[in-house]
Image (cartoon, rainbow, N blue to C red):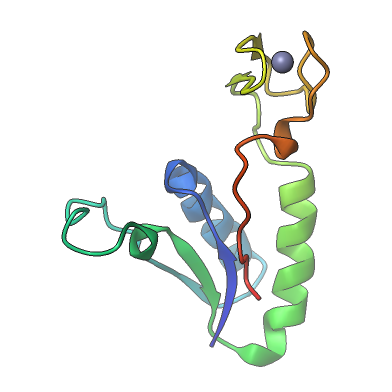
Length: 116
Ligand SMILES: [Zn+2]
């Protein structure tokens, strides 16, 4: 079993969606830490991040390609987002802030060990 991706807490709905999409592609996978984090405070915060795992190592490269493609062009990403730089709201179809031009992905200031 191999970890494919670690999602942010607020990406929980997407995590479930990607799991379903992978299952539809014939990739056996499961979501860890999929419960609502009622236990936050008792276990380290990071433990609660939803993780997508591929059950069969041999199919992992295929799952990797699929997920990378989906993450590049998120499905149904019409939700607006707030720019962390200037605080203006941009539509989900925009990858950079309409106001200050800062890329959405560059914001947040956190780095993730995603599926490595
Ligand atoms: Zn901005």
